[in-house]
Length: 479
Image (cartoon, rainbow, N blue to C red; front, side, top):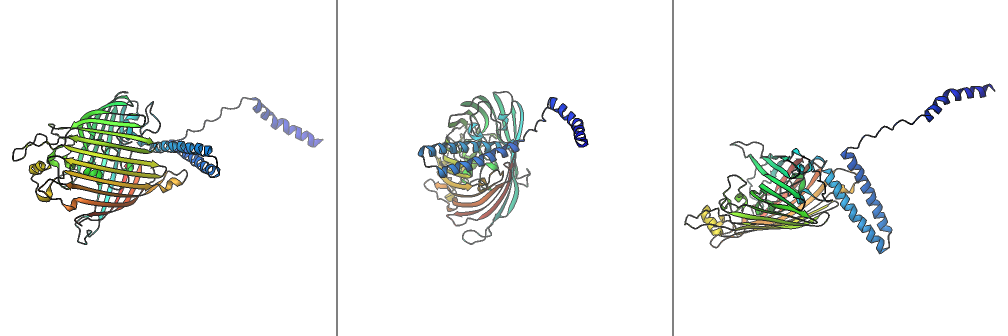
């Protein structure tokens, strides 16, 4: 009895507050702290990886054609989600999509520039700041392909340091600029330069139609508009997209661009090139006037059309054509027009961890003989009346097979051929040193999407057998 009384007493003493607490309204739950963008991306990647695993298991046991078709459709949708997650992983470097933007759109298709450069389009108004940079180390072989001593010197440099400054006035008018410093120091005893890569004003009307005026990037190839170090493989940009298609190629002009469904386009009228800068080894590269006191007696057209056949697969072509004589005359009194046309066809395919690229470029220069006379070129110094090149490239992110990781490791290979003197005028000679073949083998590592370390070996051969192999290492960032 005493034990029962003690038990009853304890129930009354301890149970009273518990009953009161049970009758009282429950306290408001403490809200969970919001997830960071990185945590949300990790959750999405884990969910995506688990879904893919389950999908592959179902495919293995499925025998129905109808079920297999449904599973393939689900696989396609998963690939679309994976692409969206990849866009999110750009973090601060990726522009927020404006209201009404379609799923899967990329900045280079929609705005004609890279993700970091397009940040200004993702803000409501005011100032936007972004940028990128890269350090490059080159280590040249001591001998050329013939076994003779090579003259190349090993160099390490801050190759580029770039700042994007943009200002969004309102929903229609946008100012965007890129300011670049090359090789760290601008001085008489250094090879550095300070340049404005682009500076233009956009009138944003609708995704399908927008206007642009100012110093614009010529919409040629795969690198010229999308040249941030995280956007391409290789410690160096492909030489085909440096000499056959100048890089970074920009001129002053005006035009229109937009996207409609799977099709995107860009059309501009710009100042023409200047034949006084043409050469045998660099083709039309130095003919670009870069918006600096550009001669404007000759004008040109630049256009591009791309087709996104399916998520991750881009195919397209571009053309640039216009006179480059700029009212100049040869010493014998002949006026030069020198119609210059640059054409390229390109493909870029990203599927899961696979990344494939291919490009063909062709340049023709009319009146190359008059260009030679203007510049005093003789023999094998001739400007190429036809210049052409191509490359194919493949890479695979082996860490894409690891669920939930933010790391990326992409072994890659690129093979390219180009000749800035594929054809020369009658009476001149081709220099076999300009008929070049390159094989690049390397790997790119990204600890986070905004940083990239690339290391590769390039076998450089030419028809003159004077090519010199080189090891390249670069560290790039984008923000």
